[in-house]
Every structure is written in C-alpha cells, then in structure tokens.
Length: 324
Image (cartoon, rainbow, N blue to C red; front, side, top):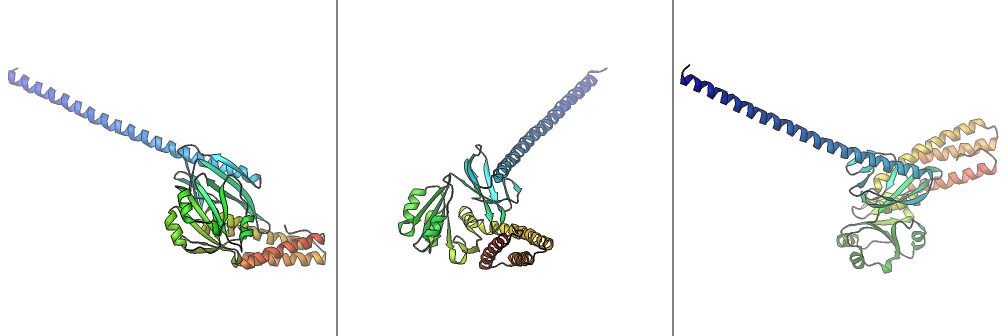
C-alpha cells in the first residue's frame, strides 16, 4: 500500500472523528436545552400550583368564616403573594378563580389583610358579603349636618383604617400630606366640590358621593351612578368603589334567586293551611315577593322590603306559618 493511500485513509478517519465530535456536541446541547426548558416549565407549573393552592386556602378561610354569620379577623398573606379581587372571583397573583362570593375590596391587596363578613338581609337573609382591606387602604367618610347622623351610624370593625369627619374639617391639601402612598377612598355624604380637583391632587384616590334620599352612589372618578340596597351594600361601595356597579348587580341577581325560593315557599304554605286569615296573609306575601323579583326601582324595593317585614309579623301574630 502506497504512502498516498495511507494518507487518504488517515484523513478520512480524522474527518469521521471530527464529525462525531460535532454531532455529539450538538446533540448534547439540544438535550441540555430540553432539560433546562423542562426545568423552567416545571418551576413555572409548580409556582402556578402553589398560587392555586394558596387561593383555595383563602377560599377555605372565607367559607369557614361565613359559618360564623358575622365577624372580623386579620389574615397575613405570605410575602410575594398578592390577593386580586374581581367581580367574577378572586385569586392569588394571576391565578383567578370564579366564585359566587360577593367580596368588596380593592382590586389588589398585599400582606396584612382585614376581613369582615356580615349577613345581607332584604328583608330575609340573601347571602353573606365580605369586606377586605389591607394596611394600605384608608377610608375617609365626610358628612354635613344633614346626613351626619346616618354617616356616623355606619359601623365598621376597628381592624380597618376608617375615619369620619365633618365637611368643615376636610382639607384635600392636608390629606395629600398625610396619605403619602396610601389608597384613599373618600366617601362624601354631601356635595363634592370639586371632585376633579380632589382626584388630581391625591392621585391614588377614589371619590364617592352618597345620596341617601335616592338610595344612590355616584363614583366621581367616572361619573357613574348606582343604586344601593341597604347599609351592607353601601359599605361595600366604600371598600370597592371602582367595582361596585358590577358587584351590586351580582348581589341583586342573588337576591332575585333567593326571593324566588321564598315565592315558592309562600305558595306551598298557602296550600297547606285551611285558615282563611293565613291563606290571605300568605297570598299577600307571595304577591309582594313576586313584585320584588320583577321590579328594578330601588325605592319600590325598599317599600316592598318594609311591606314583607310587616306581613311576616302579621302572620306571626295570627299564629300562621311565616314566610321567613
């Protein structure tokens, strides 16, 4: 075998080794990229599962709290977690879950939370509503002589940062110096003059005007006006002015569902009694309940609420079965 032939074979072997080395390097890099990508995806999925599990934990806390009927407590969120509230539900960080709970509060909360639940009755129990605030939320209620008594009668647990003052003591410049980075919800039981000036000076503020005579609240940040049914709903507006319209509509939908259940109850009770006075009382109650389901007028709803309370008392006095 000649020298040229040996050279050819040697070059050929050398080229094959280089090819194998390059192939191994590329294949190794691809496998490494796959493993890194898998690890990152695993970390991301684990994080999502943790957020979802934390959200379930919050839900369990609220559900257990609801059983007590009414009360308040503090709840500490772990560092790095944000509780986000939406009209349709709530969740931790970006993992929101749908919920039929009615929760009033800022759209995002962190660290030390104050939670309060109370029963919403109109006139019978509709559901429990929740109010949530954190250490960065301040609620300031401002009233005049006309509505001072009503404004001061609205009580909230001491775990929340709520202050009440007469309009003559209110100063937007002083509030700006005091509030710093706090979110401030200003609730006026009087005329707001001028709302745009207050909003522009405070920056991180929501301004709400309450009109008790018409059962309405005006969210001055966008000019939207919404009716409220009862003090529980009004307090809800103080905690979540930017979401109140949607949350109140959700509450009304729940009220119609529960009221329809009482319509059927009144009808069944009426069919079970032979006492004419009881039959009449239950028939009148059923009609009032049906009207409550059908009307959208806030004043009419309050009137029907009072009427149903009186009809229920009348049935009790007659020793008849009561509607609620």
